[in-house]
Image 1 (cartoon, rainbow, N blue to C red):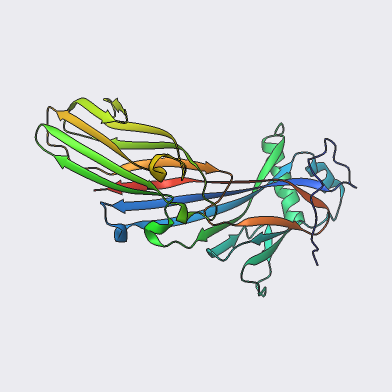
Image 2 (cartoon, one colour):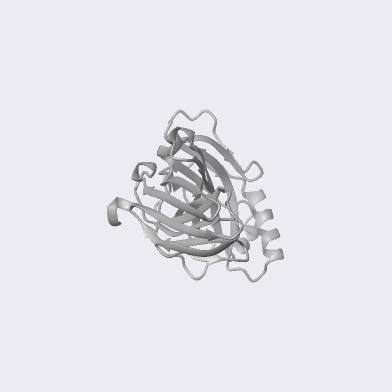
Length: 288
């Protein structure tokens, strides 16, 4: 049975059999959303997540020289917002009889992990660490309330001009711990033979791809107007009218997840050197 292990700090340079072996965990979530006009009831949302464990390359020698290495056990916490957890069936076991609705324990098939890590090291012998996908999960969502950045688009198309407005609003309710949305990019295809674009804030027009491109540095509760704003553009056309199109948005956030999921190691033999959390957009689209 696994018992709780405590981290001893940063990874050692050398890995001896008597050391607790350092592993790192990455929790990465992807938010997919589709917004229809300004109607919040038509917003469709899907949020998925992945958990990856990174093993330092030196650990392979420890595993291969030990016929029965310590079993790596971990506990996923704060799972009440998860609809589904799918462990990597080839490498990970779980106990279906667990009754705690907010945590779930898993342990790894060390023989299979060793074989898999050896295969990775043969493919890339100079890597300093190797990533192993251990589980995927789906986060329960509640429409537009689960989107970190709410969107609404408005098009006004005539034969000679197209007016576009994209309203955005930072939504802290979508996050367990509100965090900054960074590297925000908005891409809008516009047809109709655009000859000139006026935009606020300034956008870039790519004539070859027929797309307007906005880049925002970051949005949070501390931003102007609490993270609400508008992107506006007027396009002069030579072959209008334009047809309203679907725009795409990208952003990411480092240091937290939407679900609030966390992880800890259970048992002895290993320690957690790092837990890296982030979420980013998958397909994040808005129609008029």
